[in-house]
Length: 75
Image (spheres, rainbow, N blue to C red):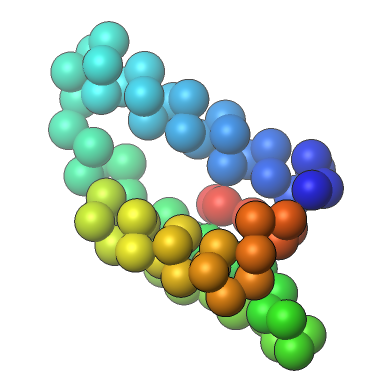
């Protein structure tokens, strides 16, 4: 997996965990985010995620479609 494309994801996940657990901040205030990746056929896919439930659904769809070694970006 390309660390340069996924590093934003890991940084954001750590920030989400910190804000939720340590600061008690509402997770919904951290959205929207954009998830982008390349489909197996080579087409670019990008989706705006507006809440935690949609986030789980979109990551599941990405991994089931492209596999766990897919390079992706979260902004």
